[in-house]
Length: 619
Image (cartoon, rainbow, N blue to C red; front, side):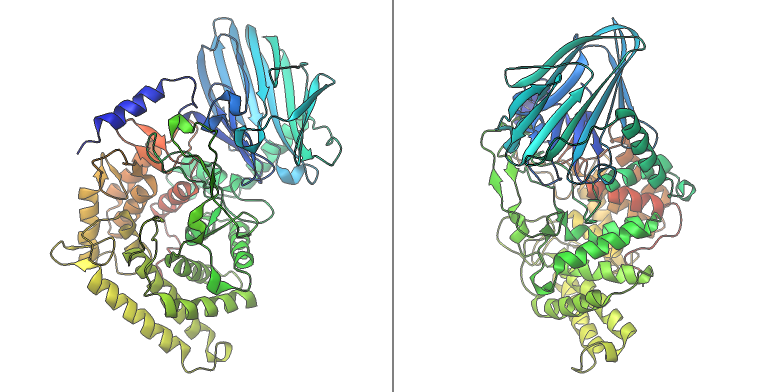
């Protein structure tokens, strides 16, 4: 099946334009444990939200043009051969450009937030001459309110101080800048052995200038921080150590160092469909990722991170587990209103640009099951149960027992009419099943006095299981389907054996997995749904491709499973980062970037293929 010619023409025409952002795969991630920036191969930092992942962007060229905010340091001629790498197992990125005039290297990093004074943040760029004499161009254009608001800037000691609303941004560098056309500019020549440094600091507008950051000391401390953290991972546990380590580092960069919350991605507005409207804000914490996250950290040996995530979840739930939201801000707060930035042209003309996410208020029944499954996995891993956790488990289970039969918006957060989605019902079973096991484990003395709770929950779980098997499996098609009464396939069905709904060798599961591979497969990748005939088609869904690998592993097909994993790893960019989707015809990454769900799946799949792991569907 082929996607429409007009879709291809639109994407390819935009791909060569210079007035829009670079390809997604051209970016590298740097972060400090509270915010993150994307650095392009061309030396331009095109995305940064300060002081937190889900705060206002001050560099927004990713979703527009350089006029919407960026920081570029690059050779004047703009050409040359570019190579880049992370410095070892860190979030310090090195970009080396070889030009006719010589060679330069730019080192970009963000000092870890825990290592800088409270209430401040920094971004450091070190430019070194390796050979020759290379003319360099410097342009720093701050734009707040997502590319719309220029700050008030004053040149100070060759740098500047910029004020905009709550933010005070200070630039200190070894090369003086001039303010022109609402941007800081400089031109300098970098000769072999020479070195220039620039530090951009964030502080509250009502505070004084933040303390000076020593670039060399900050670099050494940042390298040590990341190398020490990843050094706790036993690389001998997997056949894919480099990919697992890079995924773990990427995930750690998306965990808020104080709250323990993991954002789904550090970006907003990157399209799932070329030049389309599926442009969502992913800078929040999804409860659906709870068990994936806990399992990845536990299987990789990061017990403290797993506990921090469990504790974040409990704080977010607070004392209203019946009122779960599907997503929260990184600090656990609930208000995520959605609005559009009409003045931004969007990534390669993909509009509207959405900030916030209206799906936060949707009914998605599977999240109740995810929460209970997450807590059950934590128990199996030996994480101490708190009274708060026990109370949440009981109340969520009681609530889910009453509402599991409702229609909802499903795992893909459909904005259409609610349906009885198969995965939602299966996860309701997961939640009640786990709660029944916990009730047996804890005993009636620690539960309620209303009869045998474990038996009552087990009876509800049995009813849900029977209904899903009856209503969602279509014998004539020999497969489970997306929702009751539907004939549609859906990639989320691959999760049924992974959560233990049915054994992986159950004939119904075997048939469903085989049909998904046959009908949702696209050049060795798995899509969420069938290819559409219009211009609303999206790429292959990389987590689904890895869930397929997990299913094949459980079906004792390790070589086929490994092939799926290696295909996914093969489309990572040059520094090992992955987005949510992969557009097969254009061979490009799509969707928000880097994507936590994809990197979580890389960790879980690679470890699962390498030895014993804590599988979420286990007993």
